[in-house]
Length: 85
Image (cartoon, rainbow, N blue to C red; front, side, top):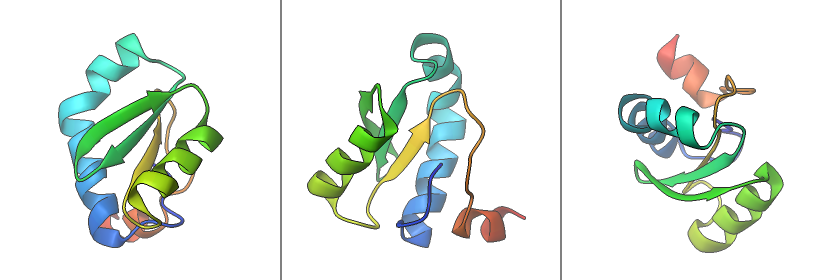
């Protein structure tokens, strides 16, 4: 989960939803792609994380979405690291 520009509530909600509901299926069907999450839902899957950030920012605004690189460990936990740890 990239969390540099996300609100703590959005980060936590999306992180939990991804791990509980989406991770297993997406890692089998979309490995290496990037998901945009908003309010605990995967709303779009794209090939490129830069594109995902641009789309997420335009559709939801800064702080209102998460980007998940499917199959990759989080590169930055930011706020999530302090909530989980």
